[in-house]
Length: 275
Image 1 (cartoon, rainbow, N blue to C red):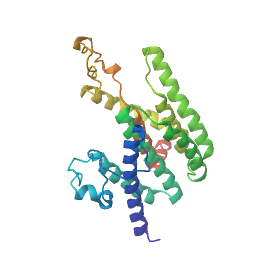
Image 2: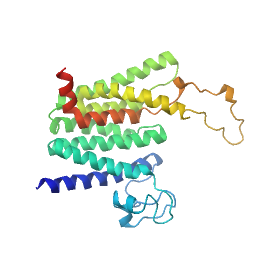
Image 3: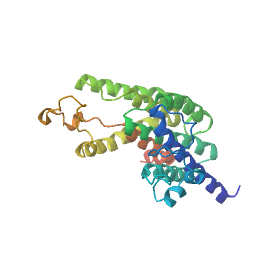
Image 4: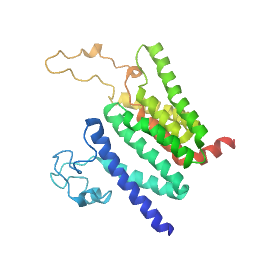
């Protein structure tokens, strides 16, 4: 196959998966089928014509608005389509096809997890549990740089390290600091990328998570939610506004760190061992 055609197929494939990822990110936490009905506007809930589902081009052509009701389409749709298209294109050039495909599957799963955790503060087990098994198979058969031994260690260490961190935080702070969803997410990362990927994800994810968490809190992400109708409002002086007690979704930061390692594992390993 000519390399230009292969690159075009990779780009189109990545953009199509990006569209699917956004659909899954919207429907899965709402317990909606990801098979039927076909794509519809999230605002007016009317089915979209086929041409309005063309990844990237439809968003640009419609200027980010629904063709039916004119409501704005969340920018995350374009971002996922274009982002995963670029990721697929990069992987096509950087790795052998089987290796590239396995890493792309992980990146698509990570993107889905990031969307759901950011919106709902949860990471569905239906993604991470099978993801650990798929990751182990992929590392054993398709990612020679990882292999089955590193993958198995990564699954064990990935879940264990984060679980231990959460348990220690709960002992010190008296409240849950890390959800089990993050634990299984790191286990999935270990399955695909092995134990080096786990430690990189933990370190790099914690660094960007700390910076992002402070920004999240300062922008009001940890503000007290309004009281339900009929109940007295919380006294502002009694509201918990401590940055240390702000609940920040950790999944997106772990997903970003793992995605970086999946894309640049050879370069990062070479840089580390050459020092």
